[in-house]
Amino acid sequence: MFALRRKSRRRPASPFSWVSILLYGAILAGGMLALQWLDVGLYAFGRGSDWQIGLAAFLFLCLGIWVGARLFAGRSSTSPEPGNPNARAALGISDREYDVLQRLSEGLSNKQIADALHISPNTVKTHVNRLFEKLDVSRRTEAIARARELGILI
Image 1: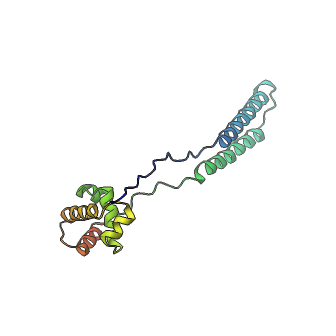
Image 2: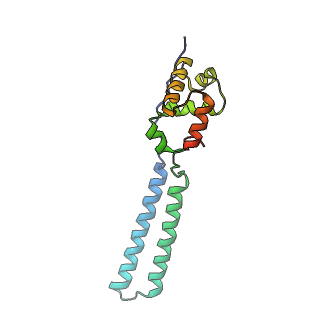
Image 3: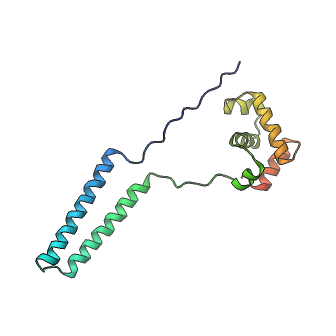
């Protein structure tokens, strides 16, 4: 009757590719060579001066900023869950029930919610009834109002 679609569980793409790993490795190797050159210049030959130390510090500062920007540019900051996750946890609202609640707030019918979430309309009815129990309400509009009142829905 209803075909349930399985969500594919792909592993998230790694933010690091082999090219970026090799690039960072080469940069670190170059930094080590620069440190060794500075060390030899300062101690072995006694020719070290303050401008060499300042230049090395400035280069490593720029390198650190560049590497940090490259590492964190593609990543989105982990945004907190929408709404009030503490209230959801306290009421015991599951992720699927939360999805149904969001669709209810959009004014969708049980059939539309079932189609959107790829579940049976009877399952939607079950989730809606459990939401009514957990939110202590008897109507959809009351459930939405109560969820907004508790900060579960934005």
